[in-house]
Length: 262
Length: 357
Image (cartoon, rainbow over all chains, first blue to last red; front, top):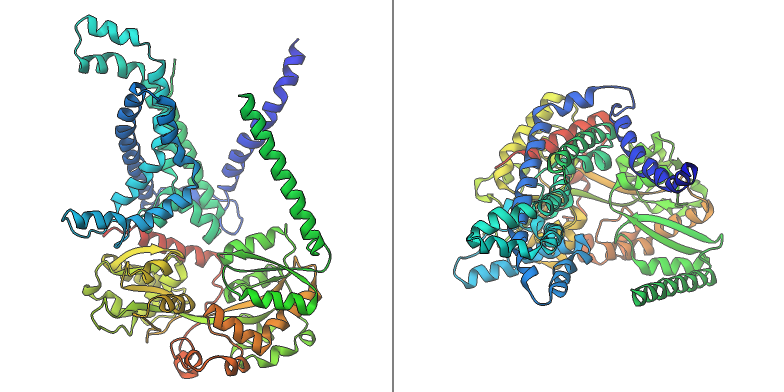
């Protein structure tokens, strides 16, 4: 009996070893070599210099902002979605943009946010005047939030759908106001969805790189940007791998922190 | 659900069929045979008519593939998956590839048209006697600026960029050597300087430029400057020529403190299978008429002396892109500084990018 089960397990074990364990092991291995291929701990020392610590902090800060705004927009959206008649259709409309290639969406914003773009035309029309939108923190966070929103909406929507409506009715019957019902009943019961959504946004947001160049004009440097540069330009794979190791540790920490689902 | 599965299978079958048909078509046209030539070049860097002409003349089929950075190209050639027959690296990449044994020596007997190349572009330090490479295009790094947006002010030097009036008006190209080189030149140091004190000084000078820098971008810079998103850009000469073709308010200048002179070169990488065909291709591109046609299409400057006779006068006489010998004498070619130094340049460049306004 046991051996039959092991046979079924085999493909999964191979998959996990080849696609999860091996790459991480390789990254850790690479992180111990300097640019000339000598064994060293120098990369780890270098990570604790102000440059990389500052970069880590700023990556955290932007990922936090992106997650926060995504959540602020996605929760009400998901809540309203569950109340609409054609839920699945509306949900599809929100997911649809993820079918378009990321690079194309980002390029589109280059045009929209440009000095002579749509956004500035609107600002001009309402009398605000032309503002620099492209290459600012605002545009970076805005575009990132736009890209990540579907990933936040989906888990929250599912959690809200699973919520037993009779619990809400019971709360109201027992005299709770709409706000109290939301705060004490709806939100705690959908917290797992919120956590899943935050993970799905925060973790990739930590290692964003392309948007930092196209939309933020390299004025925002995240750990992802540094990894890209070390692997492609400097060819200092050791340092790139070291940053990746720290990124993996941070992500594991975030998962543990937001994990413990029942 | 069943319908979904059915339509999915239908799409899959259709794509397989199309793949099969396109394969057969390629075979019919000879792509799968031995008479192919795989050319690996920068994007939009050749007049495709010339490829058709070459195919007709030689009966070879050219498969044209593109890359967007020397580093990416070298990584792919080192990996060796595709049998690239001709590649077009920049000069510092030629010396690096040479060091790493990624190049095959050229047979000059098979390249009679080499005699048309201007001698001042031959036998350069990165490849003595042109053993491995032949120049394809050359150019400079300089400043492109919009006369109208600057209100008639002229830019002639790197140090003009530090002017307080240019606040938030400059776009830089995302290259460590270009930007660090600009700062070094503005301090009258060599752009191949390896003195750490000088490099630190250059980095501090760049930090002072931060308020004027709107963004540090890649290829988008062409579109952004042509659309007047910013008044000033630090760019390669050929990109500047393209921008000027789109927006006639733009002008290009090679700063007087000095700048980078670069060469893109045709080489035969060690992955080559059709070595004879590769020589034929290189020789074909060296033919003055073909070189002229290519230069007119691409917009960069040709090193082919004889080709200049076939180019329109307004192109050849444009001192911005075909400067006199005297005016480029003080320009420097990038030297291969070694991995460690290059990493240090990049480190400083990264720190400059992180410097907030």
